[in-house]
Length: 122
Image 1 (tube, rainbow, N blue to C red):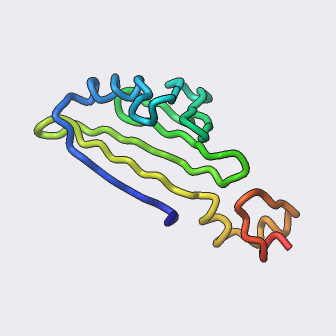
Image 2 (cartoon, rainbow, N blue to C red):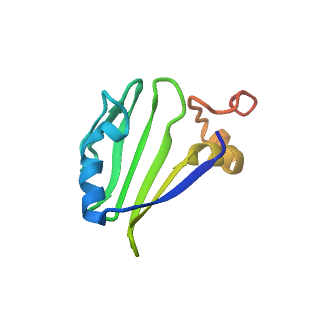
């Protein structure tokens, strides 16, 4: 996965209606659950994590990943558009970018974590 993947789409519904659909976790997966509050749990299949930010009906950000693998950050933003709502989705790997830019900091602190390049953790 690249450090960031972004998509946007225009939906023929109001931001409030789109937000209501986010509360129904089926958009993540059939067996998904999401608690729309900071610190709330996010779960879908083998992925789990927590909600970072909720700004109803404009923004939702959460972290999730599979056990033992690097987590990703997902950010959804909703903006009113001429024909409904513009939905932007960005999934990023901020920790991977930190690995590239701040690897020396990790080494100085003696910190390693799953997904850290082996050559840096050695």
